[in-house]
Image (cartoon, rainbow, N blue to C red; front, side):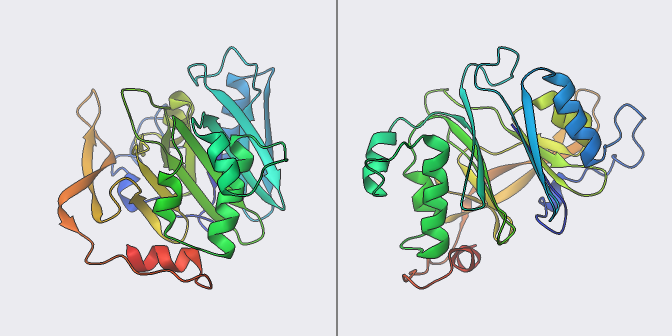
Length: 265
């Protein structure tokens, strides 16, 4: 999977920007979104497909039967519904239960469509905090949702339970665009030193930023990364066990879920 969002759509955390990016060698300089998208298609020449949106967003995926993808055998999905698009990698072990929970019985529903439905529930009704919605997803998964109507971005990576996890990386392109992909080489080439693993058990929203859904009462802290050459790279993010959010606000049915995210941050 690959998702690229220009700065007017989503701002990657400032800590991902490496101070060495500007002076890096030609091989390590960040690239522009169109170059990164071309790299992704070049890495999967026969089965990659992509779509771009006028607001400054691009989504790409590799076909579900690809043997060349870097996803370690996990299923890959790319779905759209009511102008909401989801790129999904992995599996949901409790998919059938979630289908009943969201009232989708009788419909043909896969993991990506279920995530879209969960996002729509959060966006339109917000019955409880976003972290609880994502925490209800059991399995090894990573996804990126783009709401083309509102321009909102929502991404998450499941926790590393029993060592079973999906790879996901993110970084900052040459023009400041946020780049998210399971293909480490594509992100590393596209973002130079300004890239890092996406933190497991965390979710990112274009308005509310990054937070943990496994430990929503704790704040995240950025830890400096150093590459094999000793150069500073984009930071990694870890849950700070010593700092906690004072309170989690109650969210009513009429409350905007993005605003509730901000209040809880």
